[in-house]
Image (cartoon, rainbow, N blue to C red; front, side):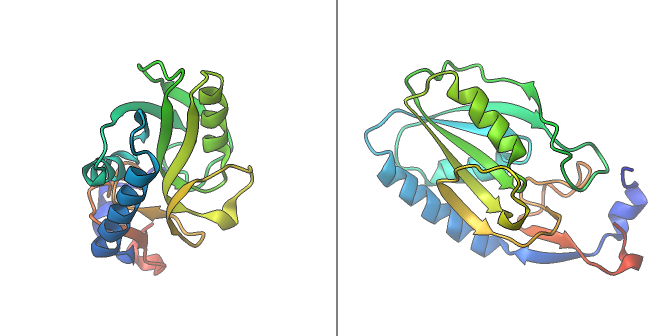
Length: 188
């Protein structure tokens, strides 16, 4: 069940990863990617919607030319706090990736089902290389084996939001990664 506006207003949020730590790590990832992909054709593919803030900050840290494209993938329904493993591609790429170096930019990897499905699909399109850069790795929830080449942070098995990630489409605008305080009187 989706949360109400009243519940959103009452939500008490604890900070899991603060803004300064996020920006420092994104800068480090940008530097590493710039070294690793120097002199190569790079296409960043962002999984919408949660990955947008990460993508835009990461792009600002790259010192190499690159292109971007987007995919939308659904594995959660509104009001649900974990994936049921069913993955739907709701918007596909506009770019032909054959022969290109593709870096999939993902906000969070938990069970791995969504990422596995996307990697399988993109792999059939014959990119020169296909790698993954995720901001958050919730490794203890992993059910599908997926390669993650660049990781921002490993996090515990908590429902997180902020910095592009949402709770029923709210809280994407937070400049940090938050979790709902576990006090039952504080909301969801």
